Image (cartoon, rainbow, N blue to C red; front, top):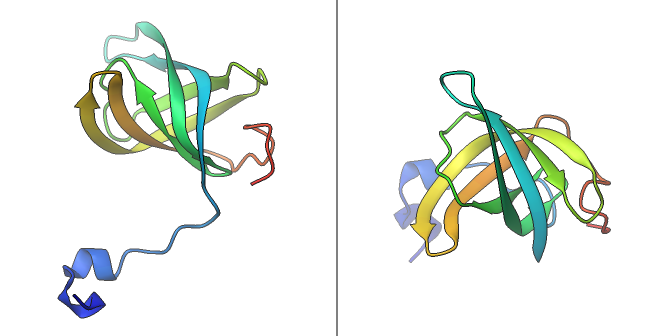
Length: 111
């Protein structure tokens, strides 16, 4: 299959901005629900980079949902937005998040 055989939206999708690293970093996730109620869950990141991560959350999050994530290993905290939502697996929902501001120190590793 050549690149031209792929759907147009995949062919024109921008390349990833940075290197990624498979990891399992424990995180906490906070967000305000539709009623204004503060929600709090713990989860983990599967894949990390300086711009965000693929995380696993026990609760389903909405696309474009603003969240606050805390790296439970480094205690770093960052604001982020949900940019992708995958499937629900036995350990939770796969969710792609992007930090509001790139954070080179958030994961505590060189990427």
